Length: 150
Image (cartoon, rainbow, N blue to C red):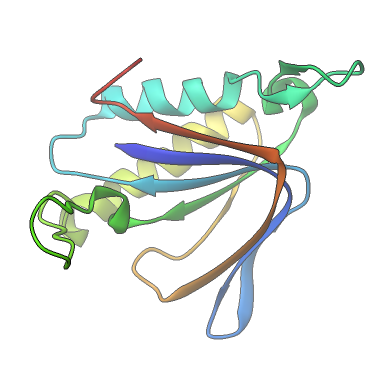
């Protein structure tokens, strides 16, 4: 799994002009799923993101997590995170999972994030043409890959 984690002061996702998920302060997580991902990857990734100390404390230092702040999370599926640009100029998405595998994994991620946070999260709609808008706070953007846990 690959995730792009952005600390935001606000974010929303629209489908067909309708807002289907929106948060104020918290994290926007763009998530890419591949066939080699496992439930262990889900558990590791969700805990890592929820407990990342990338939010400011009272001194303005990135020292607290969204869990500490009871913050919100907006999860959006994004298969293009697995784009391969090795050959030519047209990306290949061969590593991105097909819906029959990715949708159940996406739903497991939603459940795991809700368990870690102790409350519901907000989401996009898997496979839909989504319009995502955000105000990146900081800016703070972190890329996490469960296959490269650095």
